[in-house]
Amino acid sequence: MLPREGLIPTILGTAVTAAGLALSNRNPVAGWGIAGFGLAHIVLGAIDLLEHPADRLEF
Image (cartoon, rainbow, N blue to C red; front, side, top):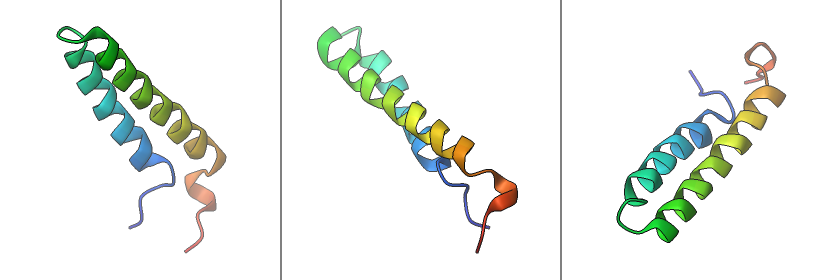
């Protein structure tokens, strides 16, 4: 089974956001920058998930 389009960037963005928030206690500038990068991935992945519903996937 192929993953839905946008699912991988969303999961990756979640992991990067969590890593950035964990890093923000030690280095706030870098931590929040990394968290913002992860949030961008979550937003773009969510847009892909909404534009390509599962019932219209073509193989």
